[in-house]
Image 1 (cartoon, rainbow, N blue to C red):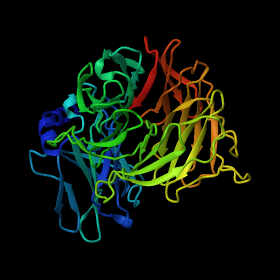
Image 2 (cartoon, rainbow, N blue to C red):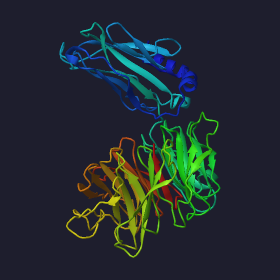
Image 3 (cartoon, rainbow, N blue to C red):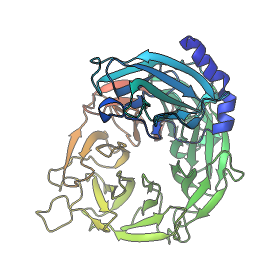
Length: 518
């Protein structure tokens, strides 16, 4: 069977895959189950590239097998658990209509050497695949021509591969009126995919792609709702996901629990964190599942972040020193209750605003970005969520120093920082600021050691004025930075050097408030 016919067969099973398996789980390649060790007691591994529409270099990769051995890949639309003689377990469903096809191929490496065998099987994903396939899963496993001491076959674990959207960037704005423009950029080509004015994108304060990337949620502070955009067509098709009745600030998706969170209320001094059902198969999809009670307490709240685990949120207040921890674990007895209250160290400026917050992997540290008065450089406080204490980034002084001009080594944030993109592994962040001519740079971090950090300013050779929002590209090798109001652009910069890669015009974008990549 040719590669083209195999891809066509995948497409033919699209409706079955979506009905039988759903499309809400995280879109990625995830190993599952246990493989079977071969010669040398080495268990071969299976992995893949990015399962994105249009990735013509997509391949399934096998490594750690017996050098030069033959291999057989199995593809199915469902996982399985079929024991074979000798202790090997087939981890994909071999019964039609789930079962798709087998693919024999040879492993390279020194012949007969344990663990030296590796190879890849190409399965290009063309750009014209039906968008209905986004989020659908295919399950794969490799059996190796290597007999184990117990008479079985060496085998990899299973691999769940969920097709996702091509890399995209969403840009949201606030330009006045009730039909603010938005843009969708194709991140493979750095070209405009679609642009429209819509009431659904009126003053976008945040945006999140749902797992798989077909659906995009945006929070609107003037539309008083969380809106949902369907990217399965040439132009975005919009509908209201959650009618909040008040301004919505910030979004987070707890993918495993299929819950979306936003901050909303009649005013920002009466905001509550609301959990909304984000399971498309649920009868309560788009309906609130609960909220905090008395979270704001008269303080101004807009910015907050959900921990990587989804178990809690960190909520700073805008013009006070209060930072709160909210339990977001639905299984907890204190779900959506405040379980910690902390106070920022004494200010170094007459006025400060807690602009953004991000939480490092492992859930221990929260990074809180601070805008100081006027042209005073920004800072970043680090809260140890485990102890409730703020980290001192210059132990030689009496004060608790934030990351900034008073830390050792100094961190050269400019004034009015607001854009804040954190790498998935927590090893670095990109921070941008909008005041004056703007700034951008990379903050290298050690997620385990808060006293290891370094700052690199970007000098891309283009104006960074109005650099309010930024986000990392899918591969985290570049960052998208929105600028305005003079000659508004979406600039793509190299994350290591800050070198300009490409720019996309955003005509009419007087305020670029949101930049989000999938």
